Length: 281
Image (cartoon, rainbow, N blue to C red; front, side, top):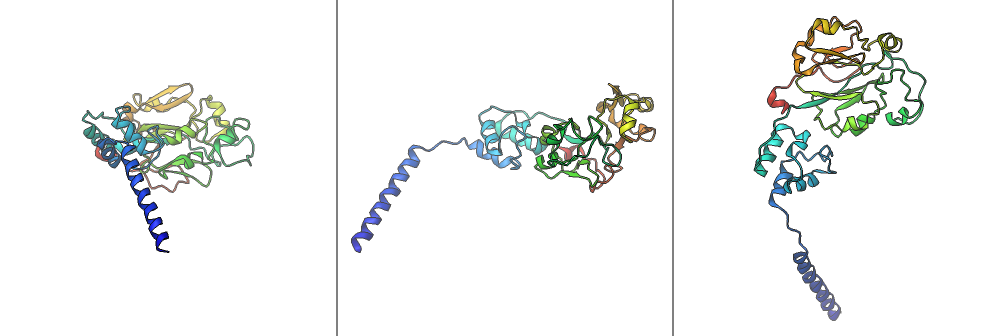
């Protein structure tokens, strides 16, 4: 019995010594800045930077392979801290949020057919270019919701995706999965948007959507600097978004919305609050 205990103890001690020697021989040196960078990151592991997780991004930053500004969810404060750790200048950037430029839900917009397939926008789009009659309208099957790492997107009961300006970090994950490019990045300070993604002529738009842009030019007449009409679709010129509000009441189809007044109908999100420059960063 005693011999067995001594024997096992000896084997264990030998193994411990070997493991200790191996750990020293094969140890990988870590740049101390990598750990400091990892601590400064949000830890969301969202992949917005192009790496599977924050650890990979931290390593690449320490090796000088990427720019600190690639961490969009961290905002300007995180970028400045990362730049400080690396001893480089922080790039100032305009904070952005994602917006669904459509408000044609199942009540306001018509379908071509009834879709009974997989609850996925990309799957639906492959079936005769999607069930919605508008070629650019939100399909409302929630692919963007599942892609968002921050819980910033909801689908209303009438099938429209809505993004919370307060929860959105600007990671762009939702844009990558939308088959209709109906989600756009806009300056966080801008609250007035044209919520339409159709480039059809006005007469065609009226046949399938109650709230689509008909390119009537009234918005441009009301606020000439704040709007441009391109390919039968109005959009806000964000360099002049502060002048865009006068056109909201004049728009005959009500496709222009100020998110301070509220999100599209059916959303549970509270009316938007415009962040200060410090908060947006």
